Length: 112
Image 1 (cartoon, rainbow, N blue to C red):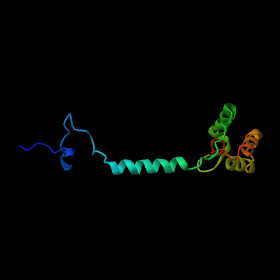
Image 2 (cartoon, rainbow, N blue to C red):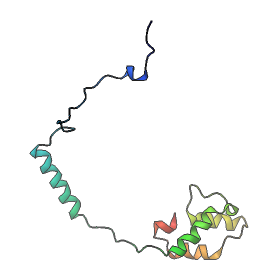
Image 3 (cartoon, rainbow, N blue to C red):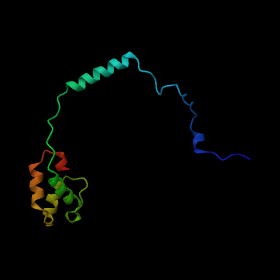
Image 4 (spheres, rainbow, N blue to C red):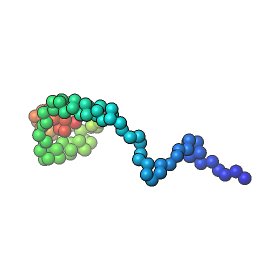
């Protein structure tokens, strides 16, 4: 009588590591030198200017606009495009939303 096959039977067997054996291979000095060079390159790059986080009340207002189905679906378009589409369809989207979107046009937290 033959035992039923297991899904693990189709994969090659690997040796288990012993308790004193470290995982992976040991890094040699060349790898360490490459890592240092990469870190220097990253540190030398100028950072993009960070924008202050938007007001939590503004984000809450935008979240409510996102979750409101009366202005149509919101997938694949920006909030401003959704507002304009709702306005063209006569759905009367809130005006403060458009004002906030135009004011914070460069901030991705507000735009998307």
